[in-house]
Image (spheres, rainbow, N blue to C red):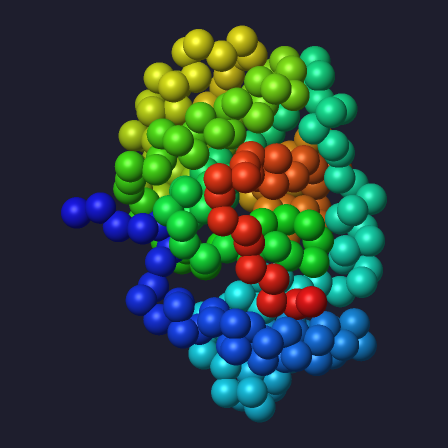
Length: 233
Protein backbone atom coordinates (compact mmCIF):
# COMPACT_ATOMS: atom_id res chain seq x y z
CA UNK A 1 0.00 0.00 0.00
CA UNK A 2 1.34 3.42 -0.96
CA UNK A 3 1.70 6.02 1.77
CA UNK A 4 2.65 9.67 1.75
CA UNK A 5 6.13 10.07 3.21
CA UNK A 6 6.03 11.96 6.52
CA UNK A 7 2.25 12.48 6.57
CA UNK A 8 0.10 12.20 9.69
CA UNK A 9 -3.69 12.66 9.63
CA UNK A 10 -3.54 15.31 12.36
CA UNK A 11 -1.14 17.51 10.37
CA UNK A 12 -3.96 19.55 8.84
CA UNK A 13 -5.02 20.57 12.35
CA UNK A 14 -1.51 20.91 13.75
CA UNK A 15 -0.39 23.22 10.96
CA UNK A 16 -3.54 25.14 10.14
CA UNK A 17 -3.17 28.93 9.70
CA UNK A 18 -4.46 29.46 13.24
CA UNK A 19 -2.07 26.88 14.70
CA UNK A 20 0.89 28.39 12.82
CA UNK A 21 0.24 31.79 14.37
CA UNK A 22 0.50 30.27 17.84
CA UNK A 23 3.60 28.31 16.84
CA UNK A 24 5.31 31.45 15.55
CA UNK A 25 4.73 33.16 18.87
CA UNK A 26 6.06 30.10 20.71
CA UNK A 27 9.12 29.91 18.44
CA UNK A 28 10.03 33.50 19.23
CA UNK A 29 10.05 32.64 22.95
CA UNK A 30 12.11 29.50 22.33
CA UNK A 31 14.59 31.39 20.17
CA UNK A 32 15.04 33.98 22.92
CA UNK A 33 15.66 31.26 25.51
CA UNK A 34 18.20 29.33 23.47
CA UNK A 35 20.03 32.56 22.62
CA UNK A 36 20.29 33.09 26.39
CA UNK A 37 21.91 29.68 26.78
CA UNK A 38 18.94 27.45 27.58
CA UNK A 39 18.87 23.90 26.20
CA UNK A 40 16.62 23.59 23.13
CA UNK A 41 14.69 20.58 24.40
CA UNK A 42 14.10 22.16 27.80
CA UNK A 43 13.02 25.46 26.24
CA UNK A 44 10.69 23.63 23.85
CA UNK A 45 9.12 21.68 26.72
CA UNK A 46 8.60 24.80 28.83
CA UNK A 47 7.14 26.95 26.04
CA UNK A 48 5.28 24.04 24.45
CA UNK A 49 3.50 23.29 27.72
CA UNK A 50 2.51 26.94 28.07
CA UNK A 51 0.99 27.06 24.58
CA UNK A 52 -0.37 23.50 24.74
CA UNK A 53 1.51 22.47 21.62
CA UNK A 54 1.32 18.92 20.28
CA UNK A 55 4.42 16.76 19.93
CA UNK A 56 4.41 17.32 16.16
CA UNK A 57 4.25 21.08 16.62
CA UNK A 58 7.09 21.03 19.14
CA UNK A 59 9.21 18.88 16.85
CA UNK A 60 8.58 21.27 13.95
CA UNK A 61 9.75 24.23 16.03
CA UNK A 62 12.79 22.37 17.36
CA UNK A 63 13.84 21.51 13.81
CA UNK A 64 13.25 25.05 12.57
CA UNK A 65 14.90 27.28 15.17
CA UNK A 66 18.57 27.86 15.93
CA UNK A 67 20.62 30.32 17.92
CA UNK A 68 21.97 33.44 16.25
CA UNK A 69 25.47 31.99 16.66
CA UNK A 70 24.50 28.71 14.96
CA UNK A 71 22.84 30.52 12.08
CA UNK A 72 25.83 32.81 11.54
CA UNK A 73 28.28 29.91 11.66
CA UNK A 74 26.27 27.72 9.29
CA UNK A 75 25.75 30.54 6.80
CA UNK A 76 29.47 31.33 6.82
CA UNK A 77 30.22 27.75 5.71
CA UNK A 78 27.55 27.55 3.00
CA UNK A 79 28.75 27.14 -0.59
CA UNK A 80 26.44 28.05 -3.46
CA UNK A 81 25.61 25.57 -6.20
CA UNK A 82 27.19 27.88 -8.76
CA UNK A 83 30.58 27.23 -7.12
CA UNK A 84 30.49 23.43 -7.50
CA UNK A 85 31.74 23.03 -11.08
CA UNK A 86 34.47 20.41 -11.21
CA UNK A 87 34.20 19.69 -7.46
CA UNK A 88 33.54 16.59 -5.35
CA UNK A 89 30.43 16.64 -3.16
CA UNK A 90 29.37 14.39 -0.27
CA UNK A 91 25.66 13.55 0.06
CA UNK A 92 23.88 12.62 3.29
CA UNK A 93 21.75 10.19 1.28
CA UNK A 94 18.73 9.38 3.41
CA UNK A 95 18.51 12.90 4.79
CA UNK A 96 18.40 14.43 1.30
CA UNK A 97 16.24 11.87 -0.47
CA UNK A 98 13.65 11.55 2.30
CA UNK A 99 13.12 15.31 2.44
CA UNK A 100 12.59 15.36 -1.33
CA UNK A 101 10.17 12.42 -1.02
CA UNK A 102 8.22 14.36 1.63
CA UNK A 103 8.01 17.41 -0.64
CA UNK A 104 6.89 15.32 -3.61
CA UNK A 105 4.33 13.53 -1.39
CA UNK A 106 2.75 16.91 -0.60
CA UNK A 107 3.48 16.35 3.09
CA UNK A 108 4.58 18.92 5.64
CA UNK A 109 8.06 20.43 5.38
CA UNK A 110 9.58 23.60 6.78
CA UNK A 111 11.79 26.49 5.83
CA UNK A 112 14.18 26.80 8.77
CA UNK A 113 16.13 29.69 10.28
CA UNK A 114 19.42 28.46 8.82
CA UNK A 115 17.95 28.35 5.29
CA UNK A 116 17.54 24.57 5.11
CA UNK A 117 14.39 22.59 4.41
CA UNK A 118 13.43 19.97 7.01
CA UNK A 119 10.57 17.53 7.50
CA UNK A 120 8.91 15.44 10.20
CA UNK A 121 9.45 12.00 8.68
CA UNK A 122 10.59 9.93 11.66
CA UNK A 123 11.67 6.61 10.14
CA UNK A 124 13.52 5.27 13.21
CA UNK A 125 15.60 2.83 11.23
CA UNK A 126 12.87 1.74 8.82
CA UNK A 127 12.68 2.78 5.19
CA UNK A 128 11.03 1.52 2.03
CA UNK A 129 10.97 2.82 -1.50
CA UNK A 130 7.77 4.65 -2.46
CA UNK A 131 6.46 5.95 -5.81
CA UNK A 132 8.14 9.32 -5.16
CA UNK A 133 11.59 7.80 -4.60
CA UNK A 134 12.63 7.77 -8.26
CA UNK A 135 11.51 11.37 -8.73
CA UNK A 136 13.36 12.43 -5.58
CA UNK A 137 16.58 10.78 -6.76
CA UNK A 138 16.26 12.37 -10.20
CA UNK A 139 15.67 15.82 -8.69
CA UNK A 140 18.86 15.43 -6.65
CA UNK A 141 20.92 14.14 -9.58
CA UNK A 142 19.54 16.81 -11.94
CA UNK A 143 20.61 19.54 -9.52
CA UNK A 144 24.11 18.02 -9.31
CA UNK A 145 24.34 17.77 -13.09
CA UNK A 146 23.26 21.39 -13.45
CA UNK A 147 25.97 22.37 -10.97
CA UNK A 148 28.52 20.51 -13.15
CA UNK A 149 30.06 18.57 -10.28
CA UNK A 150 32.88 16.14 -11.03
CA UNK A 151 32.34 13.51 -8.33
CA UNK A 152 29.32 12.58 -6.17
CA UNK A 153 29.73 10.45 -3.07
CA UNK A 154 26.41 9.32 -1.57
CA UNK A 155 26.45 7.83 1.92
CA UNK A 156 23.56 5.66 3.16
CA UNK A 157 23.11 4.51 6.75
CA UNK A 158 23.71 0.78 7.13
CA UNK A 159 21.27 0.30 10.08
CA UNK A 160 18.36 1.62 8.00
CA UNK A 161 16.29 -1.07 6.28
CA UNK A 162 16.36 -1.26 2.48
CA UNK A 163 19.55 0.79 2.23
CA UNK A 164 20.82 -1.79 -0.27
CA UNK A 165 17.71 -1.45 -2.43
CA UNK A 166 18.01 2.33 -2.41
CA UNK A 167 21.69 2.10 -3.36
CA UNK A 168 20.83 -0.13 -6.32
CA UNK A 169 18.02 2.19 -7.41
CA UNK A 170 20.23 5.28 -7.28
CA UNK A 171 22.90 3.47 -9.30
CA UNK A 172 20.36 2.50 -11.97
CA UNK A 173 18.96 6.01 -12.28
CA UNK A 174 22.42 7.62 -12.30
CA UNK A 175 23.76 5.61 -15.26
CA UNK A 176 23.08 8.40 -17.77
CA UNK A 177 24.52 11.23 -15.68
CA UNK A 178 27.97 12.62 -16.57
CA UNK A 179 29.63 12.76 -13.15
CA UNK A 180 31.50 10.00 -11.30
CA UNK A 181 29.41 8.28 -8.63
CA UNK A 182 30.38 6.47 -5.45
CA UNK A 183 27.55 5.08 -3.27
CA UNK A 184 28.49 3.68 0.12
CA UNK A 185 26.53 1.99 2.89
CA UNK A 186 28.13 2.89 6.21
CA UNK A 187 27.46 2.44 9.91
CA UNK A 188 28.10 6.04 10.98
CA UNK A 189 27.33 8.45 8.16
CA UNK A 190 27.26 11.49 10.45
CA UNK A 191 30.84 11.06 11.63
CA UNK A 192 32.06 10.31 8.13
CA UNK A 193 30.72 13.71 7.07
CA UNK A 194 32.29 15.60 9.98
CA UNK A 195 35.03 17.93 8.68
CA UNK A 196 34.18 17.12 5.04
CA UNK A 197 33.98 19.84 2.40
CA UNK A 198 30.85 20.38 0.28
CA UNK A 199 28.42 18.25 2.26
CA UNK A 200 24.78 18.07 1.13
CA UNK A 201 22.57 17.74 4.21
CA UNK A 202 20.10 19.56 6.44
CA UNK A 203 21.14 17.65 9.56
CA UNK A 204 21.97 20.32 12.13
CA UNK A 205 24.68 18.28 13.84
CA UNK A 206 26.50 17.65 10.57
CA UNK A 207 26.13 21.31 9.58
CA UNK A 208 27.84 22.30 12.81
CA UNK A 209 30.75 19.89 12.26
CA UNK A 210 31.41 19.88 8.50
CA UNK A 211 33.92 22.22 6.85
CA UNK A 212 31.41 23.47 4.25
CA UNK A 213 27.97 22.51 2.97
CA UNK A 214 25.57 22.97 0.07
CA UNK A 215 21.85 23.65 0.42
CA UNK A 216 21.02 21.39 -2.52
CA UNK A 217 17.51 20.43 -1.41
CA UNK A 218 16.36 24.03 -1.69
CA UNK A 219 17.82 24.08 -5.22
CA UNK A 220 15.60 21.13 -6.13
CA UNK A 221 12.33 22.93 -5.46
CA UNK A 222 10.29 24.02 -8.48
CA UNK A 223 7.24 26.20 -8.92
CA UNK A 224 5.15 23.03 -9.08
CA UNK A 225 5.97 22.09 -5.48
CA UNK A 226 4.07 23.54 -2.57
CA UNK A 227 5.80 26.18 -0.50
CA UNK A 228 7.39 25.21 2.81
CA UNK A 229 5.73 26.22 6.06
CA UNK A 230 7.45 28.76 8.28
CA UNK A 231 6.88 28.34 11.98
CA UNK A 232 9.35 30.96 13.18
CA UNK A 233 8.53 34.26 11.40
